[in-house]
Every structure is written in structure tokens, then in C-alpha cells.
Amino acid sequence: MGPYSPTDKKMFVDDDPNILASFLRQMRKHFTVKNALGREPALELVASAGPYAVMVSDFKMPGPDGVQFLNRQKYLTPDTVRILLTGYADVDTSIRAVNDGNIFRLLTKPMETETLLRSLVVGIRQYRLITAEWEILQKTLAGSITVLTELLPLLNPEAVGRASRIKYLAVIIAQGMGLA
Image 1: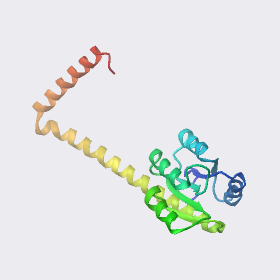
Image 2 (image 1 turned 180 degrees about the horizontal axis):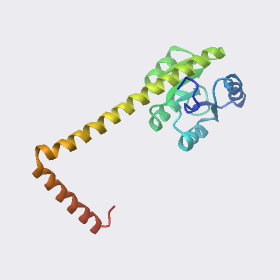
Image 3 (image 1 turned 120 degrees about the vertical axis):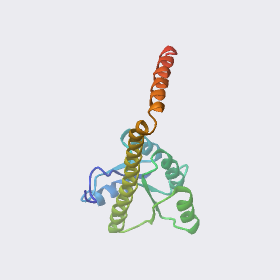
Image 4 (image 1 turned 90 degrees about the horizontal axis):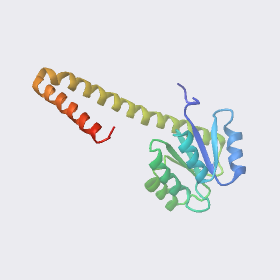
């Protein structure tokens, strides 16, 4: 799978529809992206169609800033790679972005299309690394549990019989209490 797979969803979040339209024009040859006009529509998109591989948010929006928004979004989809755009790059903003929002990249406006494109490609690669690592851990855990459950009857057949009886009784008690 190359860096331009449609399964790696990308979202731009800004309160200015003209800037969002500009992102669409710049990226349409390379990526399919979703635009969200503000934080709440972005969170609705994440809830209905998420997770997104990369989320790019403007820093200056009415209400909580982009760092606060991306920090909140981090709890909804922690694997999403977050990129912050700002026209006000100062040291305090940069420090907050990295420390509070776990921002992957901080980009300053205006920027070249190539810079944005490279950042999205690298963001997608980072997302794939994170999700591949998680998948490997899940498979390793599942495999370990399978091996242990196959070894238990060989090591202690009496314990397996006892566990089966306990399971049977627990199911009967749960059914009696009306529990699933």
C-alpha cells in the first residue's frame, strides 16, 4: 500500500471556508480529504466516519485554540496523527503544541503545497507505524493466550475440569439474575 491510499483518511479543520477550499484545491491531485468548518463538525465527522489517519487543524479559531482542540481529539482517536497550522508561530505556541497536544508537526502559514504534501505523507506513515505496532501486539497477545490455554490441560488437567465447572455455574447464576 503506497502513501496515497484512500483508506488513510485525512481531515482539515479551520473556521475559514476559503482556507478549507484552498486545501481541497491543493490536495485534490494527491489525496482525498475531508474538510470540517470548525471543531464541532470535525468531532462529528470523527464520531461518524473516523478514525482519521491525519488531522490538520488551524491554531486560531473562535473558542478553544487548535492545541486544545487537538488535545481533546487525542482522547477520541489516540492513534490519529495531529498537525497544527499557525500563522502565529512563537515559542510558547510551539511548546504547548508539542507538550499539551502531542502534535506531530507544527506548520506555519503560508506554506508551499509541497511542504503540506510531505507532512501529510509522513503523517500517514506515522499512523501506519502506530496501527501496525498495535496490530502486532494484539496478535502476539492472542497467540500467547492460545498457547497458554493449550498448555494448561497438559500441565494440570484437574484445574481445567474445575474451571469448566466454575464457568458452567457462573453462567447458570448469571442467567438466574437476568444477566447476559
